[in-house]
Length: 182
Image (cartoon, rainbow, N blue to C red; front, side, top):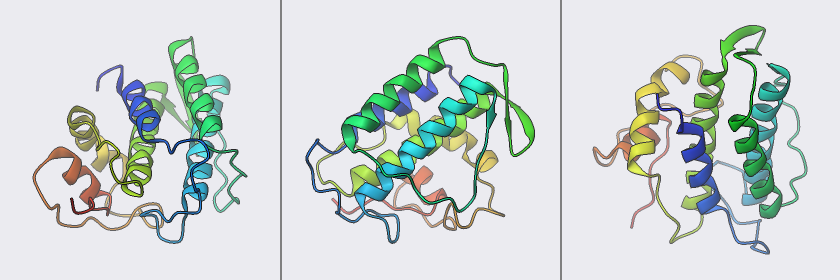
């Protein structure tokens, strides 16, 4: 795994964020979620990553209501702060669900989370960039370890047949998503 995986995921996220003032009520590929809800979830994910890097522990509360998201400028600011946190000294391990894991694993999980939700944002806004092939390829190599077939619901849908052999399509299909027709 390359050391810059989280940075590339954040760069992709920043490239697909809706413009400030955009209609955040637009639907997304996430069933029942609009853009505002998806941005709130991305904000929650960034907060969890930052918490782990700052305090060495991520306290995940299953089923907690999504926070009220202030919008794209807020997400951009938080994502850049995450990069600063990642670049600075942080704990060598982080406790998640009561188990210590290397901080680099937290970064990899964060990269997968942010990349997939960036794609969700991109898929709901025509003309935005696809997942970069090198990022998709690298995430595809770790996705089976991070998101095993068993115990993935409700976070991810079952895998589907990818429309092509491209790494981005294979990654999305593994996570139960398919790219929009172009």
